[in-house]
Image (cartoon, rainbow, N blue to C red; front, top):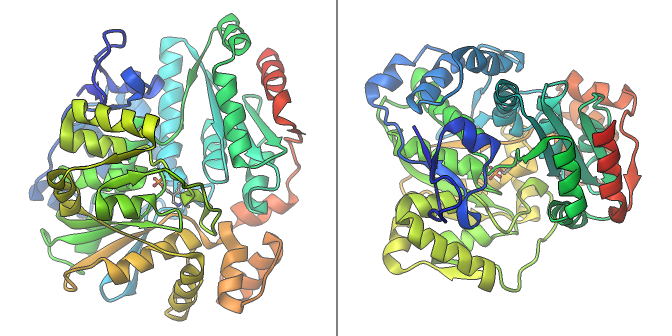
Length: 492
Ligand SMILES: *Cc1c(COP(=O)(O)O)cnc(C)c1O
């Protein structure tokens, strides 16, 4: 299957490319992204056949329906990384919280957040494709917390790929920072920046337009790639767990095969929700997809009114920082799928120039036929965390936003919900400690111990070990020194 451009073709870029090309060079004409030319479809027989097949077999069959141009041995190796999850037989457990609410836990991988679901296999695939082409790639990432650790973990010691990860010093949780600065591998560089996430991100952007930097890359024969959530190589792996969780719900007898469900997704860049949308388009019985946001509620307004409006808004820091996003990159693929390239180009260019676009009535109706949305304030989140804990479920603040949508978006109360949990409690422990005890705790270590005791759970070794590991990445610099630092890393 080939991939085509969401904003149409400019005559310079290839207008249709393969999967491996799309993951190596994800950017396309007019600032668009690549999307599948068409989607495979799955019927009930397919879902039935996978009732007991396990995650990897399902994943392999989904990837093969997309006809990806990746060697079977590479796919097998990539999928075998799910064997390192807590339970290799069931890497994505489904937990019943209420009679009609099941939580699909996407964080049982090495960095304890859902980014591993896609980045673990993606890292293996990208490195293999780069090796096969005998090309070298550099991945630059600015992170506020979860993408950085997952990207470093997946590319650690992999051939033909180097990763530089910038984080705001003091702007991440202790656990997130330790996950990055304790990564010790020759192909990884982690750099703390004096400043906030925006400083890290803008430093990265100015690097991308620097001639000196471009020359240095050329001299080293290195191309830039990207591991961010617009890369279809990540999205493809995010269609699988939606299908898997549905099948699990059937397997445990909570629904009949063919019965429709609500998917309920804590959203930032909309990669997770897009995976759910594609699963629905491919035939998964989905009644509606509920989009949960925090106080950065651009998506709630968009889905409720058809106005995507970035005028006079700026990012509000919240207790669910992985969702502190205003411009959800993957909305573009929804527009493209529903309205085509010409309209997508028009809307996205308007967003770039005027920071605003509006859908017409018909378009909005199409969006609302499959999506509904709500947002959850930090205070509401604390209450949901506490309530869920009292019902026996310990969850992170991102997951908590789904409880708002669960309460307010379901029109048909007889339909069961699959909500997605995107991080383990260990990654946002100070927030959870506050929800459970009312106490403000500054450091993760103390909060982790307090929750472990109160909830009678173990801190997983992936987290507890971090506090004893050696700090391998010690550099914290001003943003004007970033270019020099990265160039010296490339020269090593
Ligand atoms: C990345 C992330 C999200 C948002 O996912 P998108 O695919 O960007 O919408 C939500 N929660 C956590 C914990 C994350 O790391």
